Amino acid sequence: MSKRPGARSIARAGVVYFAAVAALTGVFATPAAADPAPTSPTAPASSAPATSEAPASSTAPVPSAPPVESSAPAAPKPQAERPVLEVSVDFEKGKYRTDEDVRFTLKVKNVSEVHAVDVKAAASLTDPTDLSVLSWGELDWGKGGIDIAPQAIVEVKVTGQIKGIDKDKAVVRGNLFDVSGFGVGGFYGEITVVKVAGHATGIVYGDKNGNGKPDDGEQLGGIPLTLRYAHGSVEYKATSGDDGKIDFGDVPAAKYYLGGSEGIKGWLFPFEVVQIGEATKDLAIRGVQPLNGALKASMSFTKDTYKPGELAHVTVKLSNSGSLPLVGIVAGCNRAGADFALKGGPGWGELAYLAGGATIAPGQTRSFDVTETVPDAALNHGRVAVGCDFGYSDVDLDNNPVATDEASVPGGSATLVGQVVHDSEPGKPSQGLADVKVVLASDGDCPTIVETMTDAEGYFKVADLVPGPKYRLFFAPPQGWRIKYENPIATYVVGPADNPARLRVDAEKGQEPPLTMPTRRPGCDASGTTTPAPGQQGSGGGQGGSGLASTGADVLGLGAFALAALGLGAVLLFGARRRRQPTE
Image: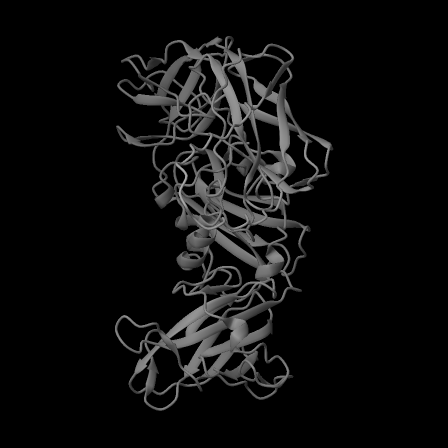
């Protein structure tokens, strides 16, 4: 069991850092300098095997101006040649059912004499007919892109889903961009959508006895529910009759989301994924009552220390103090998407998000051994975390029991840089404050203590820090100055060491209250270290002020430093409570 300090007390703090980390993983936007995606060509729809090329682009002629007397025009500035890529979309067939994956090959030929570097794809998603593509393989923006030599041909296999299942066609279109951020080629292709009617009827019931199946007298009438298409925005609504029966009508065969509804006539309807097809059996749509505190949860790593890529084991214990069986209990983990935290998956067995859930009998405590690979990013944080809520899938989340733990992932390194500034005059840029003593200390009986001073421009730097422990930053400004806000500041540092962020600390005129600096108790093996101010000589001194030029931003950088990251539980669980777990 993990024995790290605070492993059980971190469930209610840390919103700033992890919520911001999750926000950084947002939707990619096409570069501002990019050429627009091609519009639909006039060529007829392709047939199997379907191959389409992007329409040729053209440049409008520039009208001539009447002659005027002037000096000789300046010679045009030479422009770097751009690669030109010719792109075709080859579908495996020309027609797809609404419940089929659409498979195609993107064939890219460099028809220029210029090497294409870091080529990536950006597709249109604005039209209902646009194909939904989750990954473009090596052409994804989160990857390094593809290099294509002159006259070379590259093929990338892609799988997409029909977004507009109520439309007659689906289209894939977009642009390729190189390392410059400019468009170097466009692509377009379309297929015919074959609509196949699905069977979407069933019964809605309230599971009063907790056995997980409909019984006589449990039918619920007047319950409005919605089938939401999994890969688009199409919805189908229906309301159950007095006998509990519900009919969504003729809907296209496809994968749908159902449930996740809060408090309909006192019943909760857990989220589930249903496959609607021609032969789908009647749906049994289950309503459950709130847990009302009956479920308790705890969780702990089985080791104190792990390596990135290692399979971690976590012991989960669930107890039911109520009088009814709890059927369908699942884990909702890492809802904010922190990159160093476990997120749940097949190794979680019955507790996996879409596994159907575990059953906890009245008065029973069940233990589960779940496994998951330690993320690579855990090295930069110095720890791997797990934070989950437990209950019925995606309902009543605020009242679900939560559990968290963390274990050490040693070997990483981080750098912390910052600037202490003060406002000189209204409307004028802030100025750095020199000669501020900065002391950084880790938690524990034998803390790491590092001292430095701000330089003439207010900058300071602390290198070779170990990610993982909680640190505190103490500031002792010169006479006549005080730190405007928190002092000390509680922090975590995050690697890698070559990606530091800049922390801004505000000072103002006044007298700093007495500050008790950290000390090491007798018997500790190592002493604290002193780091010279940036630009001075000495070990760990860092660079001069010019090397830490201000970015002009008054916000905290998240690449290597996290202010007020005092824990992980609240954010892994509550920072994005409405973030649904992956469905595949």
